[in-house]
Length: 233
Ligand SMILES: Cc1cc2nc3c(=O)[nH]c(=O)nc-3n(C[C@H](O)[C@H](O)[C@H](O)COP(=O)(O)O)c2cc1C
Image 1 (tube, protein in one colour):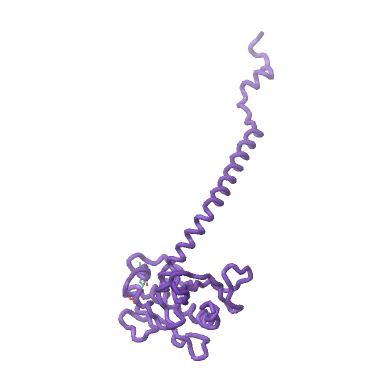
Image 2 (cartoon, rainbow, N blue to C red; image 1 turned 60 degrees about the vertical axis):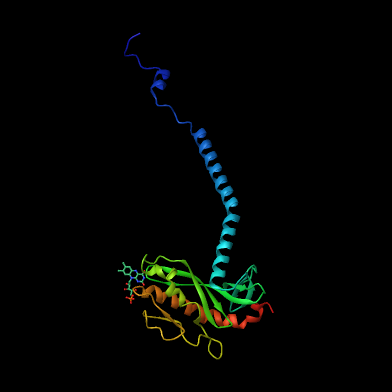
């Protein structure tokens, strides 16, 4: 047999790269994708109640912190359309947390407020006491303010003192705040509805006062309208 004879079919196949078995590959990839999807769903289902419970505990802690004397809470949604229990599917408005002492007396209402600060949106939970018509405490939930400057809004004791009994009275016809809640430069507070800013962080301080002022003008008239229901009467 001479060397310049044409190669046979078998010889040619020996020199070809091995073919990828596409069906087997698709089956394996499909199996892995299904398993991954199943695991994601499993982990989601497993962690959901844990996350919900942690969220509930965190909210409760924050509510009890901004409403002194609170020992229990009831969640509502409050809007122009009325006061709804939080589980009402038709509820429209903002979520509020009514906080009660051991005797079941309403000690205050906690609610969220937000405004843009120096870096980004600042979000807080704060307490309002309809009996004194005053703000009773704030807790920063989210912010991106500068460490050492704006972030002091979350922990500076002198700044937080502003919100222990900040005047938030409504006007005579109970439609808006009697005095706008405003931040003033550090050391310039003269009125009980003013917020004494943090020196060097006036922008962040102004944002806190502005968000409480906006929330107050919108929410306190509604709270007063539904006060008897919130008290549980
Ligand atoms: C890098 C940098 C970061 C700053 N971060 C903040 C901040 O987070 N919050 C804030 O209110 N001011 C911040 N400032 C300062 C503001 O620009 C502004 O000077 C200050 O709020 C004014 O406060 P004062 O009136 O007490 O001086 C920052 C300034 C610089 C240069």
